[in-house]
Image (cartoon, rainbow, N blue to C red; front, side):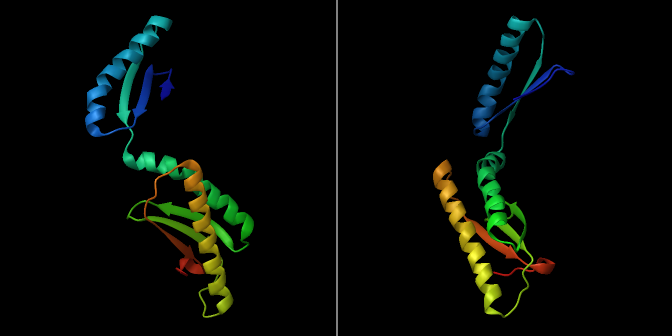
Length: 149
């Protein structure tokens, strides 16, 4: 919910199917406007919007993304950044590093180590936060944005 007192607008975002949204939006709008008006004598325009499934999924996974960024940065000096994308599916979790793509065993070993570490973070945080399992792919990128795994 957000309130903009300069325009007297209250925006409420609800979760649920399109059918649910259409069934309850008018009632929610009226109940909130009436409740505020009766307590404050201020008439707010109440707008009810539907939170998309993508927005909900993004919100639920945000703590996992934050943990991946923080913990990977602490553990690997090669870590340079993080990105993710739900489109196209599956979820792409992108770890940016300063590693070079090489045929050297040490570079490949480090890429595998980072990937396994991120997988473990996802597994632990999903369980802790009780977040549904969705397909995902971990992509490790090196210098010049080249995919390393």
